[in-house]
Amino acid sequence: MFLAAGAAVSDSHESDEPSFRPIEAFACNYNDGMGPADLEKVNAKWNAWMDDEGQDDYFAATMTPHYYGEWPFDVAWIGVWRDGNAMGTGTDMWLAEGSGLREAYGEVVSCAAHTNFASQKVQTAPDTGEEGDGAFVVAFSNCSMEEGKKFDEYLAAAKEWDTYAAENGIHESAWVWWPVYGESDNDYDFKSVVAMPDHTTAGANWQAYSEGHFRKSNELFRDLLDCDVSRLYDAKVVREMADEG
Image 1 (spheres, rainbow, N blue to C red):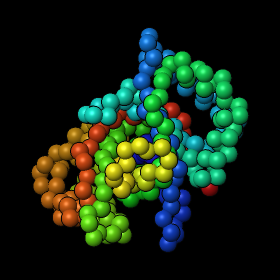
Image 2: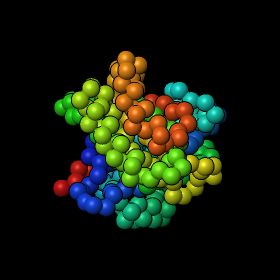
Image 3: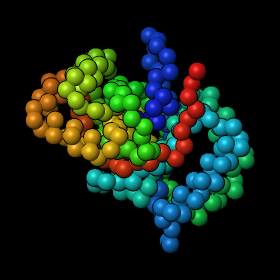
Image 4: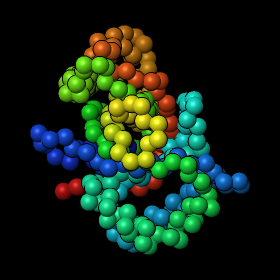
């Protein structure tokens, strides 16, 4: 899904058809007496189990709220499969053989939501050549196309913004998440997801927008999209997906 995951969630090939990644998201709260350190211990056991099972087609990250409002939770789990086939076989394996780990997670967190999305990449941040530390920042907002507007128009605007952002030092990657399973309040077309490597970059982007670059964003998107206020989360990679090729 994210900048820190590199190729794990980029479009896998050039094609006239859009490329999608299956996404799963859990929204969870810590059980009494439990916290991030307890979750990390279970994550380490899960990672070892995934290694033993040869599961290298799955990326995972945890997210904690930073700027948020009416969607509070303690921690979210975001998982990305390479494709739908990997999602199906990986899920069957998890259900058949992961009962011990499911119990271990259940001792630490209680999850009120488990949802599924189709992720489509629309913007790629410039490659700085720097190795990340596994931490990153990600913003979500729910968006709908304005009446009479088509998604192809949004894709064209996103492509133009991608070039503009790179030329003007705005460092971010972006995806569209289409809801597939589990959403109970889905009065929107898609989630707009924007990732940055750290808060320093997020702050630099904020400053760039405030110095006038917001005008280009408004010019491209204001008449196309109706989006709610973004929520910002601190994220940490739990598992990398193996490189393709």
